[in-house]
Amino acid sequence: MIHDGYVEKLKREIRDLCEKRKAVILAHNYQSPEVQDVADYIGDSLELARKAVDVNADIIVFAGVSFMAEMVAVLNEDKTVLHPVREAGCPLADFLDVETAKKFREKYPDAPFVIYVNSYAKTKIHADYIVTSASALNLISKLDADTILFGPDKNLASYVAKRTDKEIIAVPPHGYCYVHEYLISRYDIEKAKDEWADAKILVHPEVLPENQKLADYVGSTSQMLRAIGELGGNSFLLGTEEGLSYRAKNLYPDKEIYPINPRAVCIDMKKINLLNIKKSLETNRPKISLEKNIRDKVRSILESSLEMIK
Ligand code: CIZ
Ligand code: SF4
View (tube, rainbow, N blue to C red):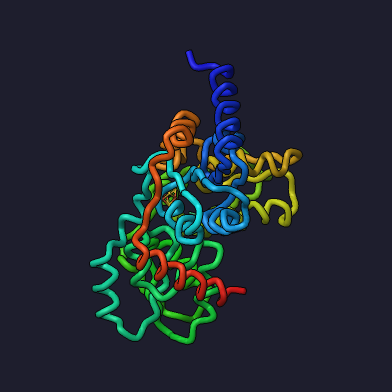
């Protein structure tokens, strides 16, 4: 049987390896409790990519999915970026391939193309701007254009469209994250409301638009964490991947915080575990490597996008 002794031993071995190899572990908000516990920093994709620039380390171990590890590599040319499970991808990112991006660009040559960070570097280079769910609305509101191409999440596209006077064309029209679309369903939200009548409901903009309406607050993971502190009240239900609740509870130990659906699990996020983090540190692989022209292009798009939302 796997028991606490095993987990604690792995954590100690990982921390020793980090010290020996001058490595830091960055973990996404959706990682499991034990991975969050062993990490040096926890955050959303952009917070982690920026953190990696500041840290004094030779090696970054990235606990999250591959498009996020790519973003860390884009901003950290001089560091080795290890991603313990190469196959930890993102089914939402898979909706937007290079061919689809090119096809929409040809059809709407005058529309700026804003791409969600949940996409792969080889597709990002065909976009004009890169956003996260925390920055999409802010950046798009500032664009001097009436029609905007946005992908790959149709629900985030709808969230932005409702809050601007611009026409947002979803690229492709049907892209979604299965965790947010199917596992934070109307049923899950109504059931949670029934059980926790006084709790505030916070959901991610990747949930269906009609379900966003059932919430007290809609925002990205970093925005939800901030909102818990700002909204008032003592109990909160989080409508996103269940890992965020562990992080939120650590940040707000005095508040009651639960996932709307404890079974809202992203399989790819959870492919990362203590054993494969340890192995990655021991073997120095798998390494993220991006072609120089792709890395430079993504960095330039990202930097101009960050400049716009300052
Ligand atoms: O940008 C991120 O980290 C993702 C995928 C979600 C979020 O809302 O933070
Ligand atoms: Fe992709 Fe959804 Fe998993 Fe995030 S939770 S990595 S969007 S599949």
